[in-house]
Figure 1 (spheres, rainbow, N blue to C red):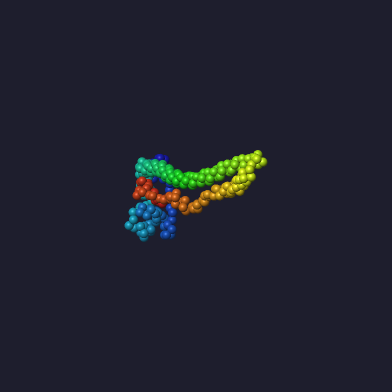
Figure 2: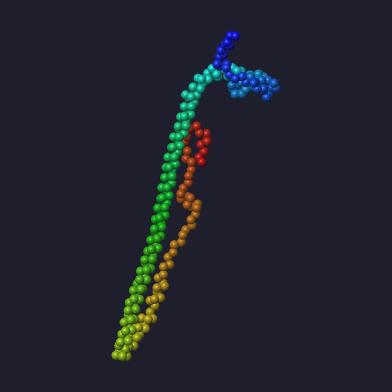
Length: 239
């Protein structure tokens, strides 16, 4: 028996069982509408796709098989390369976004440092006020203490003088010396110490979150006219 004649490679494809149309009972789906990208039956063509670009599924498949290698090559050369370019651009945009974020974080830190610096100046000013008052009060107390030391020495000397010379003193000298001693003892120098207590206080202000938030500023979306720089982004909402 003679060998069978070789078939066209474009025709050596698996035969499929025809699908039946869901609209027209018992009508096989044999046509494809290229405009609607649907697989339909011949009755569908007459009713809804008459003026469309349609052809039989077998013809459409044969046409695609004849140009399949060329089509795949074009996809590799153009489509995949275009995707690669976009993917590369996406990586570049990610790096650019990281740089921009780092810049904004640096600006935030700089602003925070400026606030802290001003607050520190205010703190130092209050601290200086408190310490200056302390120095002033302690200077007053030191004067009182020196006066009390002198008073103590004067009393001690008068007591010793009376003790040693009482028998030889004239009545007038004795009375005068005793009066002087009594005056020293009755003076109110010691009572003035209480008037020199340190009463200056610091009262903290209200730490309000809203005020602090206002001082620190806000984060907002400042999109440029073309923020995506050629990227095919559909959603440009800032998160």
